[in-house]
Image 1 (spheres, rainbow, N blue to C red):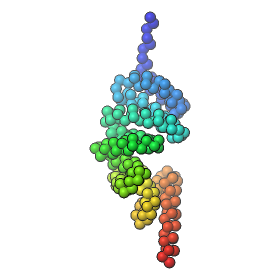
Image 2: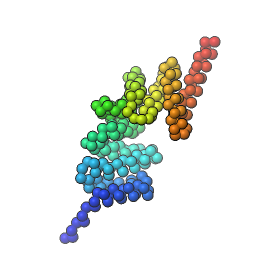
Image 3: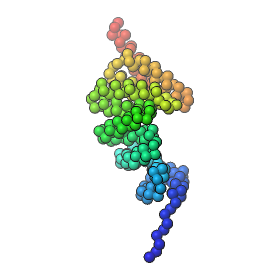
Image 4: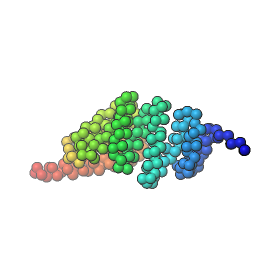
Length: 244
C-alpha cells in the first residue's frame, strides 16, 4: 500500500492564502472554501486556526458587502460564529465583541431579529466586563435600533442615548463611534419630532463630520449632516409661519 502524503506545513498554507489573496482578492480565497476545514485542521492551536480562518472571514465579508446576496450573508454568519469563540480563547475580547456586533447586524438584515439581539447583548456584556466603551456603544446601537423597530420606543431611545454616552468615553482614537451614535439617535428624534433635542446634537454631528471630511475628503456623514440641517431649517421656518 502506498504511503500517505505528509501533511502540508502550516506556513505553506498561509503562504498560499496570502499569494491568492494578493493576486485575486476575496474571489480567489472564496474559491478555496472546499479546502478550508482541511487547512484549519493543520493548526496546532487556536492562534494557528484563527490565522487561517481570518482569510476566509475577510473574503466572505467582502463578498457579502459587494453582492448583498443573502446566501453569502449566511456564509459570513457561519464563519463569524466559528471566529467568535477563538477570539475569546485568545483573550482578544475587544475583537470578539466587535465580531459579535457584526454578526448581530447581519442577522438583523436577514430578519433573524431575536438572534441578532442576543448577539448584541453578548457584545455589550463583553464591553462592560472588559471596559471597551466603543464596544458598549456599538452594542447599544444595535439593541436600540432593534427596540425601536420592535415598537419598544422609549427603551430604544434610552439605549441609543446610552450608546452616545459610551461613545464619548471610547478608548479609540477617532470619532467614528460618536458619529454613528449621533446619526442613529438623530434619525429617531427627527421621527419623533423632538426638534429641541435634535438641534444641539445636530451641531455636534456637523462638527464631527466636518472634521472627518477635512482628514479624508468629503464623506457621507457630512452630506447627511447637510440633509439633517435642511430638514431642521424647514421645520423651524414652518413653525415661525404658524406662529405668525
